[in-house]
Length: 444
Ligand code: ADP
Image (cartoon, rainbow, N blue to C red):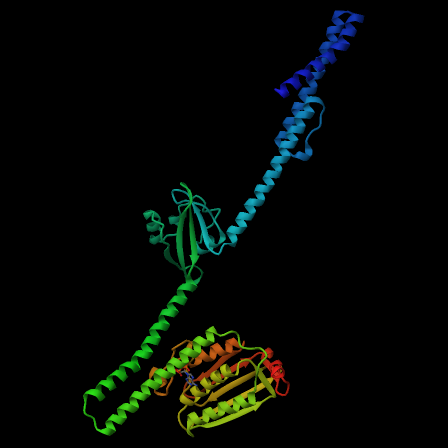
């Protein structure tokens, strides 16, 4: 109503403005001349409106607030109001673009694959993780049935049953073999989300955990069964004292075996739970090496030649008890897997840029296919030999753990029938000159 009044008032003023010269001309030159002037004025007004209308139409073809035509009178009002509206829309469009960009960025950042499906299970949108996990293309495959692209019967069944209370597991051969947990989340009548979480690692850990429990149970069951059998025999049968003693010896062997296994299990679990080893505590290498050599000689009982070759006035920084346990395991293996008469050589080479501790033997050696798996828990090449010599199958797992905790690595070189060399490489940051007091020594 307000606009109508304005238009009327302006139109009346405009006509009055045209009529005024026409009336003057009429008074001077007569009616015809007056009408002619009025008609000319009307034509000029019409031309003005046609021109502004054409400018408006031109502008509407590609509305750009910066290129808004300017005019006077009613057209100025119209252009100004269009200009304001267009500016508002441009601002809104900008805001929406930003919002879409932010949401698609968030979609990309999601660790899960996400596919938006319509009511018929056709792909509406998907993020990059879904593209990788299912091998689909968010642009080219939009509108395709997801089951045509992910051709796994379990998925078709899951979607068909329309019971999305639990996720399902899908195995794909993509990216070197993945296990995905697929969950459908309906979020309105027409759409649903398909979420694909990569649970490959979690599944691997679960398998490792199950294998570990099975291995521990098996390792404990064997000596326990033997113990129970001996106990039964000793209780039921009348045995001569020598026989009884033999049985008791065998029983204590089995209980020692269980004890060793539990000790190693406890060592491993405390290594896993313990905080990082100290970075400022000195391990006095001369003392540790002498102790390790003594252990080797005791274990060998004179059946091997044990040599120590230590070079370099540097100590290690870290946990002495952990390192002693790692070195003891390496030395114990060298003695146990080297027949009598063989040699075991301990070498320590240290400098400011790092150190190597190696245990070399002339024992039975290892064929190459076993080497990468030796540090796995309970991995043994010859189960019988390991057990006979008091092995638990956890020694090298402990060594690896201790070294990792000290940023060190283990290198294994071996040749079947000729011997093995296990070398621990320590980085420069774990080194300290042997005569320099560490922060810990100063504090003490
Ligand atoms: P185990 O208690 O059985 O010795 P480890 O974890 O210490 O367990 O070692 C794993 C396996 O690696 C052993 O069972 C053995 O087959 C092999 N092994 C380790 N050290 C040596 C070595 N010095 N010479 C030959 N084989 C070895």
